[in-house]
Image (tube, rainbow, N blue to C red):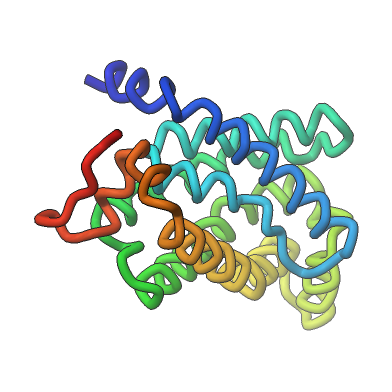
Length: 205
């Protein structure tokens, strides 16, 4: 059952979309790092494939993007693969329950996703990297440390300060994108049926 679901998600028109989504994660993530803004924006592709294809595609997108980013100059991202698994699986879970049918439910799901991502990534950032990621979010860690919090607490508070906003923006961007896809493209992906009421499912091409 699981093998069949994986095979169905990782075949046909899904593969070009996954490749595009990996490139999207890498490109936007690098821009965010270069600008040193207190957000990541490196999971847009993961969210996109998780919605349009399914959880396995979303998780594969996130893992592949992190591994490639680690190989080309940011090895720390290899340690955050577990976070990409959470993003891919949770996004698909929300999508399959109609969470992306309206902007407000998409935004709410993004905030919840941000809390989950912050909780999973905090121990990694604190214990593996000492809370320093050479990103714009480091300033928040310094701020919370100066307030007397422990390293783990400071990293978690930093995550709670930035991740929900990061994922809120990411979810809303992808929400706007998928709801503007031309019908001939949308019909290629099973996830589009999760975005409309069941009696209005989009026929597949």
